Amino acid sequence: MALVSLSACSWFGSRKPELPAPTELIVTGAPEGSLIFVDGSKTGPEAAAGDHPQILIVAAGAHRVEIHLEDKIVYREDTDVSLGEHRVLTVLSGTGR
Image 1 (cartoon, helix red, strand yellow):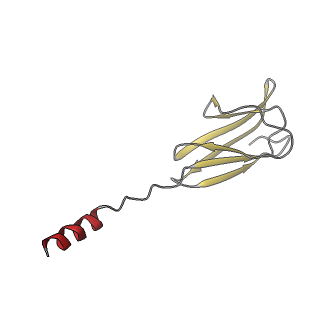
Image 2 (image 1 turned 135 degrees about the horizontal axis):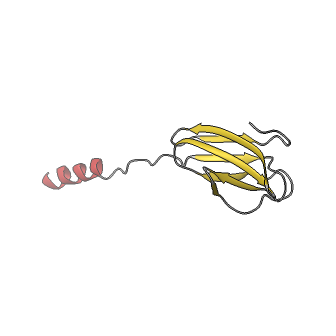
């Protein structure tokens, strides 16, 4: 009987808390050869040809996303993401917000 009681206690205590999904900014539509900056820091390699999204893991909170092409900022957006959120940012060529 004591063995059954002890094993039941360990069953309830062995559950691991679920971790939240990573907080992501998913950038689509960045021009080929452009660089993505989040809060002033370069993130990842140059954007590839086509509309391949770039997934950036970020901390929850407010962020400024900039797309740099050569020496120009071709796109800027301020955004706020919640913990575990997957926010999609679509770069519109020739516009800056």
